[in-house]
Image (cartoon, rainbow, N blue to C red; front, side, top):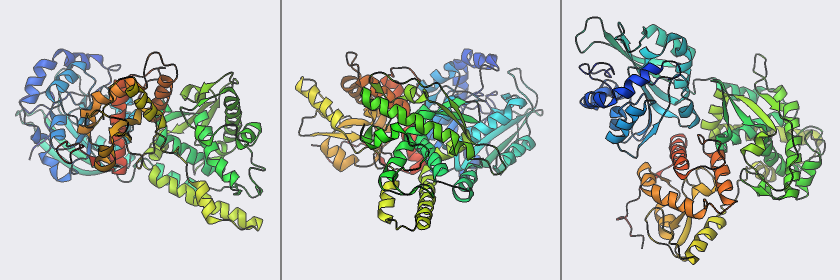
Length: 606
């Protein structure tokens, strides 16, 4: 039986990492590992990585499960997981250790993040959930006062059924900065977070020091472990409703969490803030087709939007056709007339949301769940881009993190429950009004209408480049394209995630796109192999310095749909590529989308 080795003693079997710890709290720890990275790499890499997993191998999920290695150090464990077929998010705040790791373990299945306990802000914002979170010989370096927060963050990274694996060092500190640990403390934290202790294995110190001993602990997360799913079930099914507004707000948030999570901002450990304009934008997209179909949203709503609290001049302008339904989305570029109509409709919807559903959505024991903060609204002059800055100008909505995370991870189950209850309410209102309701029309109006697969813009850009003599290549095969062999591929497939953003649209050889890749997710290897070609395409098609429109649209769409990008006006290709890779992992993990591995020898693309 083998334990996960410690980081601090090579003779015991040092791990590939050191304690992933917040430099703001204890900077000497990170500085020490930066200064000693080269020496530690030799010692750490000398120990067989298989030893770190043998003692709980029977509990490990099969590859390609996702592993988050918190404190990945020189990457020995991360590299071993990747070599076994796992997808690894390697979290390491020491630049020196991370440099050694990236040199020693160059694998497309490892994504390196600079992040630290107890906050893990970057890791959390990525939206990736793991089957295994590994914390090897780290816990003794976290001060006891920070441990509840750190533990909460670690649990938040797990998917239902996921494993948290920890090794605990018992004994005096050797000078690097350590604190006492106990299995009782970990068990208490596990109980308070709904975790189950699956295994606890004690062991003496393999170096033979009588004053040092170890305990390896495996914990499992049942359900989502946060209470968010029971709360959502209560709000959807049990909470009293005098109109469909509560369901409308929950669904608007669910759509934001699933498709525009990049616009969410951190607000401490337990909350995130969403632009109020984004919630209102989704609200309008939900209610416009319902009103058009004359479906009742309240007992007194008998025709269209008559009597609904959010209807005003802005809404009426939208109903009259001031802008296309497809322009109710992030990244849309609007002229002055359309911009004013949308601005007014968003203002009306935001005020109603604050006044009604946000005010009355409460916890079962009382207390509002959502907090909204208005901002002074300035009427736009001229054209505008529907981006994060525009949507944030209406204010923000503060959402409990566990609720937001559940909406991200379980949208595929939460949204159908919302739709089912919404339909039930509408049928009840119609029956009270004594009028029949067309079930087919109701189902159609309740369908979230994503923009159609509009690939006209990237196709036009590719053809324009060809006409100018610039070679355009298939990002997957490298084959030079001609107008009659050009296809536009959704890199992350439309069937899994209907995203028509520019960053997701790639030139591809028609046979590769339609007969080989099809509706599959590119593997980590395929995405890495295509990386330079993808960045070349983005640069040539969308990010030309002389273009004043497409770079803004590209950046706005990427920041909205890909969590983790900064708020700058311009985003770089490599930044978007890293965020896209994380989104690929999240979709594969949450939805089980089949993977595609590009093998040129299989089926000649010619």
